[in-house]
Image (cartoon, rainbow, N blue to C red; front, side, top):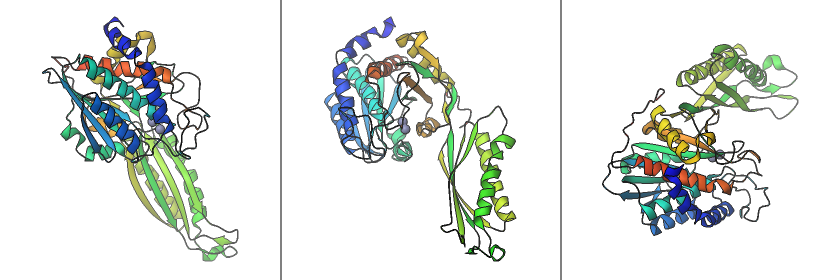
Length: 401
Ligand SMILES: [Zn+2]
Ligand SMILES: [Zn+2]
């Protein structure tokens, strides 16, 4: 703890600024790729503190670069900036100014934790190398990470390691939780159309009923995880939508199913996808329907490098003490930082938002301002530890990439 005491002491003096900044961003939430106010605020502050600022990276993303000394190390830290299409129900004084938009995932807090570290690191420059701060748009399912990568993020701002942090309600306040290897699930989306022959509800023998085929397919799909996947492995098959028919006396022409599939391992992911498609096709065929399946791979498995995670854990223990550092659980949700980790090794960690309070994406959720200092101090400690005259040379252990 001693080692990073100077960081905490420095940040404590700006704690009220960070709180005010977080609440200001919270009051002005912006959806994915619309983060204009937030991006302008981030860009202005980084510029004032002496960063080389690049805007419009991946549409509304911002990158700040700061060099100190002659070190060759290149570290990238990423925060997300987007809000969700949710009506806020917190009744807080800094509650959202916009109906139907809310910082319900704490990305306001993530942005400010990284800004806090940015301000400290620029003012003190106790590091050696190149620091790249990545403020990413559109994390909530719109592909902001991919947009930044497609815009040449890692070619324009090469990094040897990338790290990102997400708050987690239910984990004790300020605790830092890490995990080696796969941590968050892949996601595949399927849109399925079962084509039948519509007609009069009194004459099913003259029709091909896609509703019956769809109902049967939904039930058959429940066997994929139970009967085709090793019980030691994790997978989820969810049919989130089934749309068919309008009237009691009409047999519909089409049924539409929308599925999401999740896995924590590339092989399991492939096996689930194969079985789901085979079951849909053969179920449709057995009822005389035609199935069209549109598959969209949405996210890869998020895989933390063992070596980078061990490094990040060491810094966490030095900062917070071993009793406040834990093993993160695997999560079947997805995270688009997975795309960045496919291109550059690193680690994604969680910071506890506190044991009480609603889960992220709930309309009553709020980021806990009491963890701003811990998060900012962690980023600063990680930067000072990584960016030294002799930066660590770690190789990725991307088992699944
Ligand atoms: Zn979210
Ligand atoms: Zn989030």
